[in-house]
Image (cartoon, rainbow over all chains, first blue to last red; front, side, top):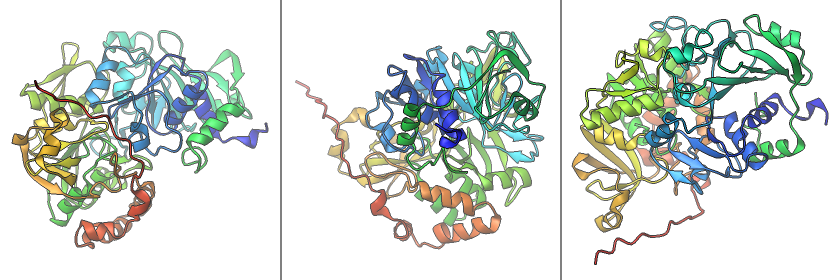
Length: 257
Length: 274
């Protein structure tokens, strides 16, 4: 398969799907993670379960397009339709293995800003806010964020911590009483960054096909450390791509923009 | 409003608030899709107390940005929450508690910028948020406000219990024996309900389980047109201020393409008593 046979978003979905292990309870966010869950459940993780913050648990993804987690096909055939506080309760008990969070800005310790660029009292940009992001960041056992790889998005230090990652380094979460394990990976349009066990600073784990370590480092807003065995991110398989395109037939999430 | 998150948003009621020229409202909700952005752009809002304001499938809320960044058309006070914390703030009000302690938002700057959240003894104390009125849209209700809402409920129960009073909008207005045949599905006590509004199609462009699909193109159109104040003004005139009522609004929508056709009936339950 040639490199042009898939889009960066399709590769991100496949990479995110591989973060999901079979049997896990996954707190699914919006956009690409909805597709990532669908791909994982349809391939290597048939016994995974999805939780959606508006109050849903389901196993099989509905076939076809979802604009939001609340579209009627995502409700029909659910394992549980309930109130939000019930699904948050499961996460607060530590029962959510993996969560996905979107973000506008992430820093070297995996802290996310989805609230304010500039002074919160008079911001230059007001971003939409936490949604369930801060809850996932604090309470899930581990989480992954997906982001466009640009220097203005991968920054040395976020100006506002909406969803805390590893704070200012190893041990920060424990000191502040955060229940969950924090960020495990940042999947970008160019690469996959990971965090060491126990928290700390993100490092470059793999670069996507056609990209170089130097390019990724130059487009990162801090001096990005590189794993000794930095690899190439495996491209999406034909099976993964088929599922992505089944779940997003018009490319609303994966082929526009 | 918008207490079920993306589905069942009472857009018709929100648009009526705009038509009536309401001012200085405090909006409370989790995510309300683009409805909050529209109310803010129309100048109805002084404060927003929510987890997320934007356009779920399209991204940023342009009116929200203009109001928070430049005070246009009016200055806006923002009290940020997470989804969990706005739920807990409403539960606190529903239970009559001075606060609810939680471990969510530990380590988040949201605690430092929202005065309704206090860090104490290793926990976050969430102060109650009591709406004067909660507006919701359900699939069916009787005239007394015994509403059946099915699908994910989001924060609808706590928003209704916390509020001083509730306005129930419904897709179908039914006889009491229909809803009373399944009291477990009744959302809220009739004592909370101040008014029932029969407003079919009142959630468009938001979906409603069993009735309406989500109108993704309407959200995309709104996102493109609301980028500028002028574009938003033209959108508002066309979709809110111009149409005389909801029927005139729906005449502009391809309702047949959005209507849910596949029926998936649940099994009835037996409340037999002797």
